[in-house]
Length: 288
Ligand code: NAP
Image (cartoon, rainbow, N blue to C red; front, side, top):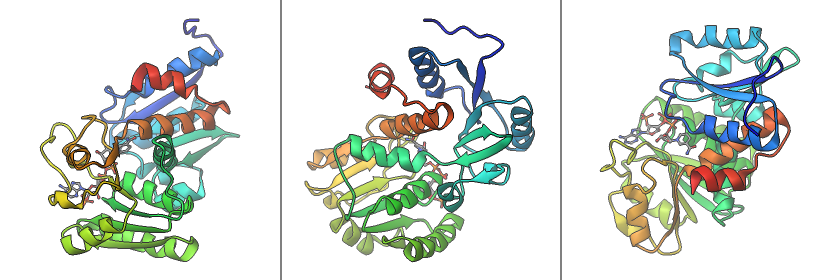
């Protein structure tokens, strides 16, 4: 079946800048086609100044929902009518459902990452994780990993506004979950080596290594990559960052950010349509 747009077709959208490179329209439109759902998913390049007007416009024309990508995830928090507890804690929204006249903001980045960990054959329940970065994606991963039962999470970040924000969130997580979280400066190499040495999973959630700066890497001392350490990078362009390459050379099991992208989209699809995305077909077609 090809896509037929009628007067009943529901509109879903991605708002960001830039957005033209996004794989999201492919995975959602193909899933609508496969499940014969009457929706279409389009990308709109929206500036930070234009976000409020774009969101009000989508609400007034009765769109079914939308995704947000850089740089709009935090700004969307104050434009939504309601936030899920995870989106409020993370202070970022990447998925909005328009229901009963209200825009409800969700965050599926964290659940997408944790699903990608499981899809790679790993389970962080009761284990320790070291997380590099304290930006939007890192925060979503941190909160979801704590909610999903990670025993300990050590976060490493530059001393910046994100560090200070995450420091406050660490206190909240320690107070409200059974996870024991700590945050350190990325420059503290002694602590970094000790934390990685105690960890089951090491995750890069900084843009270090992402195209076009492919020659950068968040880890300088490759002796931290021991054989039984699982190493993941949420970057998917390139598919193998220097960080993953060095880890793989030292015998670590590694995986990149492609499946995080897939599973955060699959969760958004489920929120909008109430149906499961046919992930195996989508994976084979666009992600393998
Ligand atoms: P972000 O909010 O800008 O956060 C970036 C984090 O990395 C911040 O903690 C930042 O520190 C740190 N950082 C940036 N440059 C650094 C450097 N040179 N040295 C040390 N730390 C540095 O970005 P984001 O949205 O979290 O995205 C981070 C990466 O994840 C990007 O590569 C993005 O493409 C990727 N991502 C992937 C997915 C997926 O589905 N696979 C989803 C979301 C994001 P400061 O705050 O101090 O600048």
